Length: 247
Length: 376
Image (cartoon, rainbow over all chains, first blue to last red; front, side, top):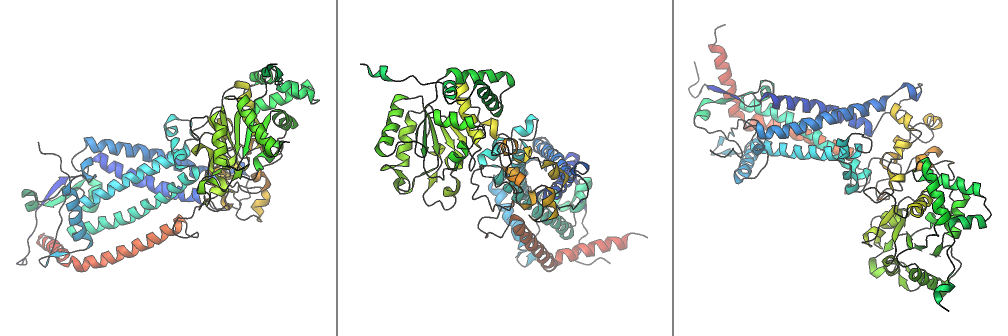
């Protein structure tokens, strides 16, 4: 009793997100949440009308401790992801993120038309079928890497004077370039809002793609699998921004 | 007779001190205090004392431009009376508009003589910024612009000390919109070692310490990236604050008249800029170690930091967001952006169900079909 227009798809299973990528993703999510929560507290702490002496409580100290510990995790996780961009599979490759080709920009424009403006072509809905990141997503992740960099520079820059280790001290030049801790701190705070807005839109779009395309978008960051229609697969119709050069 | 013969030998600091009526014990106390201030170990006290006993005074030219003279005021109120005596009466302020006896033509002559006599040896101390707008007419002395005087005096100086925030970073007169284009010294003079001693004013003992360092070692003190002596500007006021335990504990003053303020809790929430300010206030304090702003219950205003007049309000740590009015903090804008994002997402979600109706419908039908085909 199948509808006459109905075409039952056969799906190919594609291993898109390797275990290190998934590990990076979820660790990143956890530490960013920790950093945002503790960061907000540090910037505007509650005044506790505590009857205790200062020697008995360490509230602000703990928030700062968690912030700094999470920052180190975030930093090394970030470095690891950059490394994986060179050794991981094609969906993790750095070429997926940096718009250097005309094709990349064209694809971003296509995604914009299809997923944001929802334009139709010849009265028909359009599909943009990518297996890994689409070009728009790749570019947005590239922006997040820049935001990561800004946070690492300003954050370790502020931390440098307190840290005894050589690593944060490498960033001690940042506040002096920016003209003091005040502006450094302000930039660190402003940039945090990028993470919040990104996270909200990111989660929404994951649900959106899962709902509209039905190809396992949400669960892909769990098991690493995405599914693609067999005809698309066979005809190689899927799109990948900046594919690795043909051998 | 040869002119050189007429010149009186410059006395040493020690000779001057003894002549002033201090005894050797006072002198040694002063040497110890200064050694401690400039961060030397105990064994170096002798070095300081020897330097002051044997080396002739350093000739100093002290220029005043756009400023309020609070640096000089701070300097002559250094806790140890000998600081003022030695470093002012005797050292050798060969020229300084505020404190010298000469005036008019004689004063200008004195400046010229010092520059000629101690060519390449004198220390040029500058208090105040230099206005460069309108060819520098906003600050002129004796018919010359301050820029002209500075260039002339800097040419043969051994080193330059930029006293206070005016000379180090421009202070209030360089705050936006900076109508006179007040400019700090390091942006005008190149090729000379410049020591920045920021603060509004800097601590008197810090100023004395810098001069004693120059005298003792004959070199400029170790400077940080910005050009400030590390001995005094390497730590945040926050990191040496005696109220720091309250910060770590999370015990804060909310308003200046609350119970927490009486208890002396941390002033972080009432806008203390200690966490972003590098200075020695928490350690050396003011007026001979009597107190400093935070000890008096007032937050640090960050006077030794660059652009401190433009770094937001004095009682607010969170900066306003340029271009969005003074009340809009980064968080306000962030919340508005978050709200707008939420609305946009909701609109997009609704639009999706219309715009992508066919695809969604196909997926549903396909999924249901498969479900029916499966045996239960």
